[in-house]
Length: 287
Image (cartoon, rainbow, N blue to C red; front, side):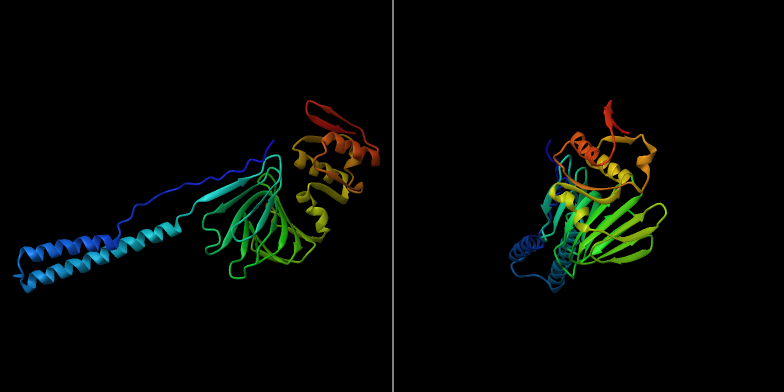
């Protein structure tokens, strides 16, 4: 299964009237008229021709700048999509973006002209090229992250109420629900879009961003959180049947290669926790 990356673009072409060509043609016509009257042109006629030249120049220049302005502000959007594999690409300013599985990034053709703005759904790791004059912005519905140049990870999902941002290097400005928070390295911010609540805590950013290297790392997280992460990563239904395993005090740590199957991962977990699992109609049950 290959990464599905595509460009959606609407290309338009406007054929414009050249002011220079129009003026040249008018001059030829005027010269022909002058030759036709053999120099016997009254002052009134000459004045009328001069006025016509001025009007045509004004109209041509206005037309040219109007359409130039329209072309400059025309905005088209392009979308990068990652399917079952992650994808990395470089924007024209040198910013490197790694999309996690089942994620997508939308960018405008005006990117970098006045601002550097993208829209994210899913998870992505950003290595932003520094440009103080043009801050980099990630838009996520009613929330956004603005940076000058830094490394950070963002998770946003239309199906989830939460946005999770993890800062690796530099600083970022998170803005949501009229709140602005400046983050420092190894901090993770969780924003709930329904309640507008923000939680900020210290984390090991190497663990959070290990996915971009094809590794799933987890350190002292609850077993239920690990299962939730596996659901998202493998896009499978996993259900915990034993209530004791839902206790937040049941903590786990470890690492997996993303090339391992979900069965292999569950087998590794069963070596450190007293669990059993089985699969029925594509659903994994843990007891």
